[in-house]
Image 1 (cartoon, helix red, strand yellow):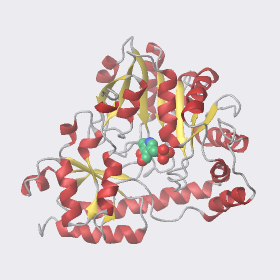
Image 2: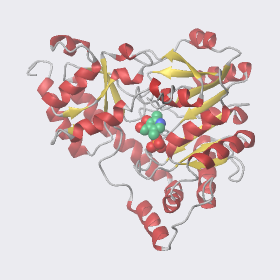
Image 3: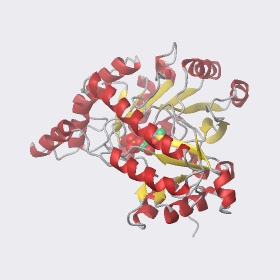
Length: 394
Ligand SMILES: Cc1ncc(COP(=O)(O)O)c(C=O)c1O
């Protein structure tokens, strides 16, 4: 019996697979999947605990409890200059993951094209296929991960329904500049396309870079879907609470898909999320500084190795070029490199191939995450010293 032709076109997540590989190697450090190994803020956990103790055990309103949608609206105005009506423009989802899936399903018709920057967060490939869209990929070029404006302009055409933006970006750490976003916005207006933007790393940003939401640019409020979640900003990846902000017309469709896909996100955790979103600016300043130090620790350790790291401007990942090291150890591709690193130095990372539509385009790259405690990163640095430039021990 033939099963789905669509699911046959993609594999399970390599990122999450690398976590399983790490678990098979006791003592290894998982710098593959992006989740923190330190606790979330106590006050947020307490808010969710109290909700459970008050017997908040039943389905929440499908598009999210009112308190959370109000908190999202307030935060979007404060941090993103987006005006959102909690009743009309916000859908609470099971993480940004569901937010992206329901958003694409809500706007795509068979044959529509969507534009995706690559290297990309690996979910966007299956998201596009499952929504029936034909993706067109635009390359972000190292070292600054910029893109060619002319190439992007040529990719837009009458079939273009949407462009997926992820800023700050996973895996590259790129933070899209206002100039780039204005250019993209101009193309969306010219071709009647929607900007679907994943901004879950908005507060994890370094060296004076500035996060801009494309929805805040002139005429973009009605043609943007802004996706976010509590996973990265508040170190709560397992709670599965996210959201999508869009104009009323698009939100109506998003809510329908969401209703039948998941009914809703966990009710008591939405209470915790509402509390999280009310934290003051001090929290966000602490977060950015905490991750700047983490980035510097891992980046400096990688600089001493045979891998060549690109310094990220945002998010919590470092992409590296590994061609010299791979040649030396006769490793044919980045998947073999990832297995080799976990076996020989005890660090799990993600093969670059999983971030490209044509996997061989990332065959000499590898990504490490640094959303870990200072102790873990110190330990990881000592493991990385095994492949130090001068020693060449491994
Ligand atoms: C760019 C990006 N979007 C979405 C997600 C998943 O978000 P969530 O946990 O909110 O579903 C990740 C997780 O690593 C990510 O890097």
